[in-house]
Length: 293
Image 1 (cartoon, rainbow, N blue to C red):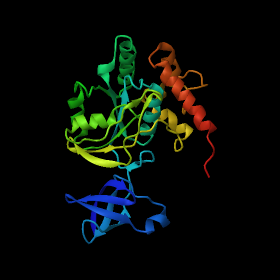
Image 2: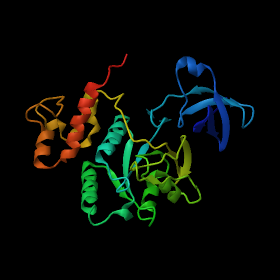
Image 3: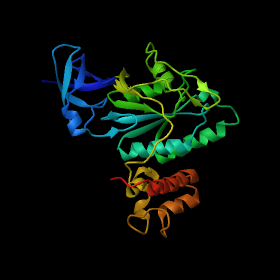
Image 4: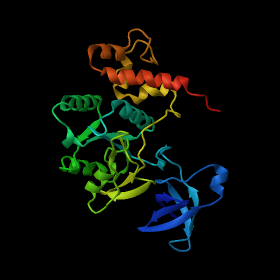
């Protein structure tokens, strides 16, 4: 019985990398009974007569997993957000960050298409970059067209399993092509009518880049907090965590409680108002969701 890592899932087949060789496998019926679906990134045991006819026998315990995109055992998430076309969206970025923080995955923010930033949009983009760096996030400024910042990203990938994610049309596939010339992933133009990109990636697949594995994932533009509980949400904002010990009440929700260090930092301008507004709106969204049974 061999062991390996699933590096691609497509049309009911799982492609398992083991000792430098890739085996095409199917899942045994036992997975349907256990309600376990193998994911890209899973470590598995399998048996194979040859490279085309294998069967996954067991999926080993995961350290984390995402539902959208469906991937497991991730070290870090490269969150690609364009400065323009489509416009930088801190609200959507904060949604991604909450989901990533909740899974204990390290987020790295990449602001793409910096070559398209003009004098009018530059102050706003630069302020967002300063804000997220102040929180403690790594924020990289990148232009695929000029290759500015592309090589800065490469060392972050070495020895890691990374997932590239972000709104459709921000240039994820273009960035991956720039990181590994010759990859030739399909890229999509921006639909100016819709203001977002066309979906170009149809499945999840690992690509070897920079001494690590990168997952190119389908683009998507909505995230729900189905798995995040109210008490978990404040822990997904690092600047709140850093100040929570100074709140008067233990377990402070940073909303209605008096002598809240987070609200004091908000009042003094140390926490951007939009971050706090997103936090409050996420609280309401979690409160209003339908209960799970």
